[in-house]
Image (cartoon, rainbow, N blue to C red):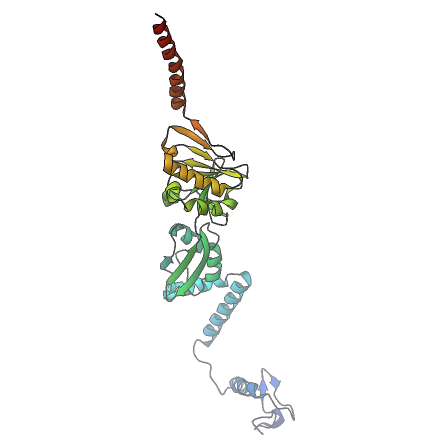
Amino acid sequence: MSALRWGQGKGGAAGSALFGMPLSFDHFVLPRQLRRPVRVLARLCGGEYEAPRFAAAILSAALIASSSAYGAYVGGYGDSIVQGVTARTGFAVDQIKVIGNRQTSEIDVLDRIGLDGWTSLIGFDAEAARERIGTLPWVEGAAVRKIYPHTLEVRIDEREPFALWQQGNDLSVIERSGEVIAPFSGGKQALLPLIIGTGAPAQAPGFLEKIKRYPELAARVKGYIRVGERRWDLRLENGITIKLPEDDEDQAIAELVKLDHDNGILARDIVGVDMRLADRLVLELSPEAATQREASLNEKPKSLTKRKAGTKI
């Protein structure tokens, strides 16, 4: 028990002291984890141990380093220190792989990642970067993965474009749900169907499916115009506007296709086909065709007058 109790060593009750204070307390046993450190301190103070060279300098450096680390932690600079140290020891991000982007620019992705010249892969917050990338217009979902020692991999799932929506002077790319993705920027987006007017995005998916049942007609449609949020007009590539009725548009589309197949009305010199009336079909002639028709109608009475005059002679 001599190793466990203070005051029972060689010097008796007054044999040991630490910094001038006696270490003799009868019937007191130190906890196990403190016994070795106390023995070392007691022997060091009693002259049994000699401090190594530069011990004071080492202790001072350790004190300064620990104080600096604590100050950096309290001041919020801990992450910056970790970033700087680990980046200079071989973990600086120097390669980024962006996968799955078709409409999203890699420059925009890099901007959201927020790297500088000494960003460390160890301290890099991949989740925060994923959330920032998710704010890009075309991005539906993203994943950011660290590949040690110095690579970031970014996988992007993009939103699916459905059509171009024109409202006034604004032209936007929209999803099938009608949600706006981004302003129209050209390129392959120009091949998307064009829908026009207020309320068009909500009704367009079902209506376009009806038109797709007639490929020959669908191939000639340049724009789908929603009128008064009640009915549709079709604008063809040759400039003809087809005014569909508010009700029974399926039947009207089928009749239009049949008339064109039998009589070729969509290839005539007309500017419009009005199908809004249930009992008739109205064709609107172009100005040139209207002038020619009027001229032909005016010529017929003159010829009859000449014949009558000749007979009388």
